Length: 116
Image (cartoon, rainbow, N blue to C red; front, side):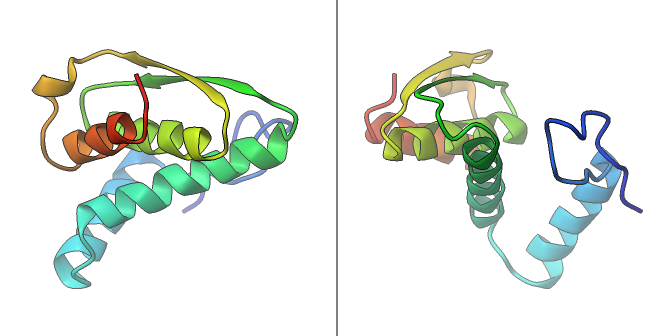
């Protein structure tokens, strides 16, 4: 079920395949009633925590955000980095006004926190 990271020397976590994550997300949202934005916040926060543990001295971070929910996860990472007083640069592949749903909400939260 789990697929070991190909960069285990850099990422200490195991990775799930995309279809496994989609199935778990569907189950959490549809069966458990967990809002998608909550899952996105948890994912982005967990990703930022891994980054912080792996590179504790980092003071600058660049985040690439696509136009879908993975981009939304990226905006959560960027917001957590702002909260940690890091210098953050987001490279958005889609303009914020083209984002939808949870991704747009995550982007708006990043911008409201002072992100650019």
